[in-house]
Length: 264
Image (cartoon, rainbow, N blue to C red; front, top):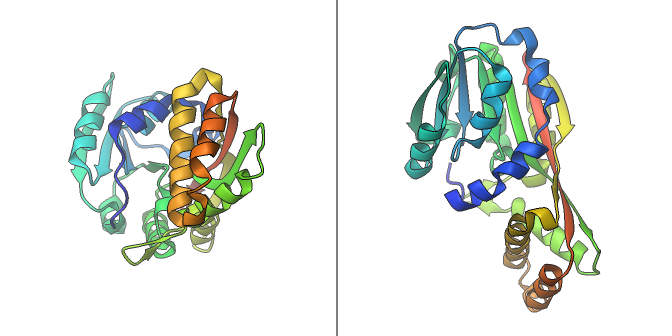
């Protein structure tokens, strides 16, 4: 799998919004499914380790985290930041979509954040098959839902949203990305294999108190839309100027998903 790389600066900028947005309910639903000591958690596409920093305290007890990413720079940052009593870490560089059931044996939990929308339907099905075969629960947070609510509204909002969602569904190196369809596809992939799936909304709520993140997110949202639909490029500079000079508030919809194989 080849997916876009992410700058550590961007991942750091969004970490607090991610932490506030993730559903705190879903980790609680794991319950007795996490009955190993220590827990072995595989974090797929770990970035700088924000998922681990958010989840480790909620899981409690002794934990061994296996951090997977294709970017060695991010792995170094993640491995150095995942510290605490009873927590050990190892890093694995490589293609996380190549993981199969044999790789997951002995794993207590599979996690990922902002990953599913970058996968294909086939890759999601292979991951679901591996998790179900070995009875490993999976927690996937912050998958894009394809809906953005901007306040105040503008006539061009819908055009930029439509183009951005199409960009999320683009074909990259022959891989048709799921984009906003990721949660629905992942739900089907697990449920057809007998797993129970629970989803919860996990929206970013951006405003003046997160001005730097709001501005960076908006620029990226508009740039992706223009890449997908070049006809929007002429309107983009004035649109950004108006948006960034005003009191913009944004709700960026995401979804968290917990899959519990019946064996669990």
